[in-house]
Length: 210
Image 1 (cartoon, one colour):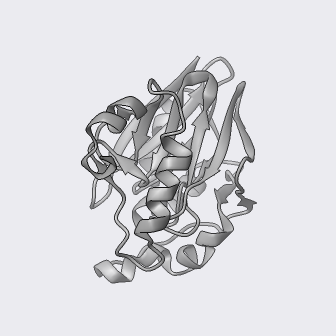
Image 2: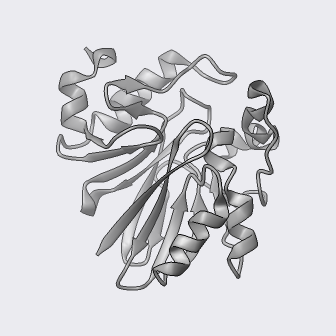
């Protein structure tokens, strides 16, 4: 069984996800927003080994908890990021634009690419490159569970902002059409902020997609 724990962390209430194959007691962290020690403690409490940290993109509010995780977990889990977001990661995810400083944690050692397959125990996730919010934004799609961890590409009745450096409204809308709306309507969307939704709900009700 795949179990997903949502933890709302950090100054802009980012959704961090602890995604686990509970049959094998192995988990990954997707977008550790803040308080990495809290995420690591939750995994430990449940008896789950954190095998990797997957980043949908490198904005500060999606990476700031990585350092805390690797300090708590042994061996330190590798960090996965699309190389187009490496410059953003090196700039602390743009934290200085908001008057903040963060420790981005260990350098990413897994380079994500479109159509790459990743595993959490017995479950396979497809990496889909979805630029627009940032150049290297990706989403993680688990077809068997009809589930997408979609970061800041799309939200319930909203879309990711494109006014920060590297953003592109045209690219974002193209990504939503190609990487989100191409999926079955019942596919769950777990976004970087706000509540869960589905492809079908957003196709019908999202004002940006009308």
